[in-house]
Picture 1 (cartoon, rainbow, N blue to C red):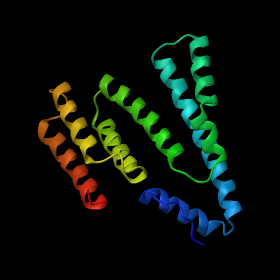
Picture 2: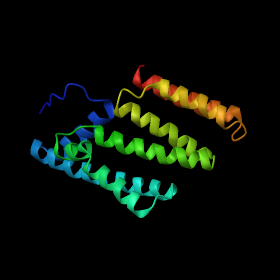
Picture 3: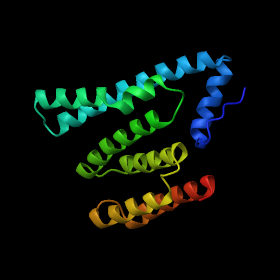
Picture 4: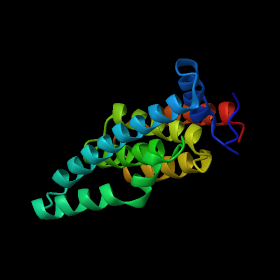
Length: 171
């Protein structure tokens, strides 16, 4: 079966392909993505709740934020729509924000690698995330965290991920 989805990034095409291998009917695939998007929305809400705790928001502000996320048309419509990559992208972006906050509070190599991996995943999910974003983050990171990891280590990590970006996406 061929779906005409105009344009989908490679990682999302892989997810759709795997879904069609397990479920042969398009209605089963649509149901799978419906539940998949609901699960992703739950994770978005959990991460948003953790961010509220990090920023020490009051209970009423936390409730209002989670309520507005829940009734957001983007959240509501991609749960009931055909398979699309917006829900996964939204999840990775909010996860990336949480990792940024943790990284700039406690600089660690593990968090730095997670940031680069998330950028790589975002590039495969949505073509708007190109190596330019990686270059901007690397420059800001070197400017802000001069004493954290030796510059050589950061450069090796950066060049490894820029190679993955360029080699695999063709940008």
